[in-house]
Picture 1 (cartoon, rainbow, N blue to C red):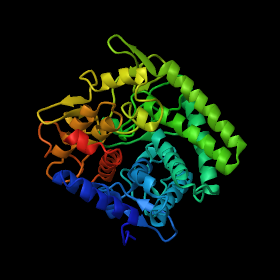
Picture 2 (picture 1 turned 120 degrees about the vertical axis):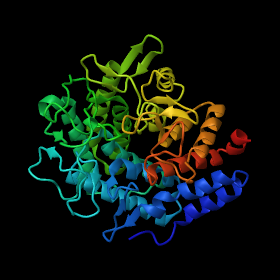
Picture 3 (picture 1 turned 30 degrees about the vertical axis):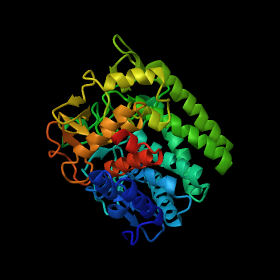
Length: 436
């Protein structure tokens, strides 16, 4: 069932924006369309009390996207029971899905056997609930992050039931297994159609990796296969949420073993990032690699999807002024990053998932959210306003020379993230200052 009525807290934000954004008519229209887009078009309330959130133009629920789509609403949930019910219902659905298959990244609304492709995995037969089984670390990070942020904002503990406890323990166990991917992992993935990046090579196992302390990922948050198995920003995200999980284990669950296990794994991952995730660049100095294999090979790049190297402060792994992050940021926002593009109308980070010279609104918003320079933020806000392709919405990728050429006209994550940035600037009373 679609939402019958917009939660009051969202209506209050839209009313405030109508007044504060009046001097900027196009921005006002875009915010009014984008900020509630997830709730208006992708959110379904289920009879079992759960919430199903599709990505937009794909009729499945990604654990990553659905979490990112509701994150900006959490700050409004304390005094809004209806919004709280939506978020708690999503958490219920997510952790139930994780227990069905912790290696899957996207799920169906019903057990209807719908899926993107008939992929080859180690399972004897496909799970009818699973839309896609691309294993990505961030798919397991995001629901923990949303659960933790919701608890910190509202103090409500209803989501932390036996399902959450069992799923959390399963996640920690899986990440432990994937520290020893080549020796212990049951996961295999082969796609027989589509582009090269849609499958894992070496009989579905990926290229060999050595033990580092980090945990292995088959795919990036773009849903493209990893070139090297240790995806550094995803491991950073895992480290952050393991800290969240340890706090929840102590203060909510009363589970000493889960706390111990989470902190021990976090220490392993942090050690692995420090030892194998930092590259000494001759120009930029010490910087984070995007991927590593523990055998001396690195992918020096960044991808527009979050978790990304650009998003490190947003994830909570390091501060905006951290020296290694600053070096990394200089690299990834330069032509030395193979997915950084400059054109007639825009410049920014794209992805091998989309055509060359297409950059992403998500990366532009993330650049603004992680910036310490008000002039840079102002430039990015103007760029976001000017590259909507005359639709009033954000998109996936768009042509740096002509924003009217874009991918995905209905991409709720990008819309809601844009809304998060504009709301933050309103709350900080910075919009008038940076836009004039």
